[in-house]
Figure: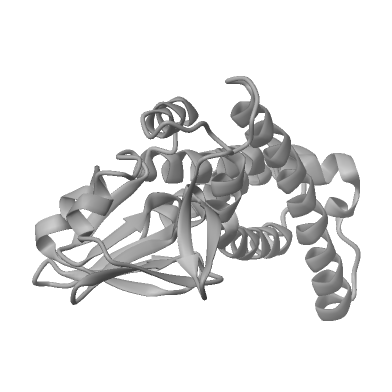
Length: 259
């Protein structure tokens, strides 16, 4: 089971326990409401967790003070928690009215806040984000320092790449991955592929060390665009990017993914 799933199940269980305590306090014997809320809540977080890497990729590149990322996390956690309440309550209303043909005490907003805790949902969102931050070390200060070493600043770092006889100014953060191909390298940005006659090793030295990692002798990938990775029994595996592109990594460089 993935760590993300463990986190989701943990907070769903916490909400279930506190919701059951509230039901007992109110003298409500039926567990159907909690089971529906737990199932719909888990579904909500499973879907939302797929978009967290993309959210963090955007959030960590926003200009401002060191409080920008915490503010974005906190406000988005509150918003996602509220959306979760409405989503779960909608599913509960539909389920109870159509299946059991009855009303539920959890229809009331105050009751809903106890049977499906807003704080628990916010905790789940923040925990999932912290997990991704820990895995990829998307710390703004480190990223800023890394980009400054290349002679540029966050949000304006770019490199000149040739395409169809023209020169494009490409944001470094927009580069998804780089692969070696015979006597050249291919730079993938998601919208275009650029060919550059340079060795992978020398090009790697021009990139921010905290953002780009080597996952194969012929592949460099941008941490900001990694969604997840899976290892085979022999230690090799596949990296899945936010664009659904899959890249193979070798066991020799697997430690870079865990760093």
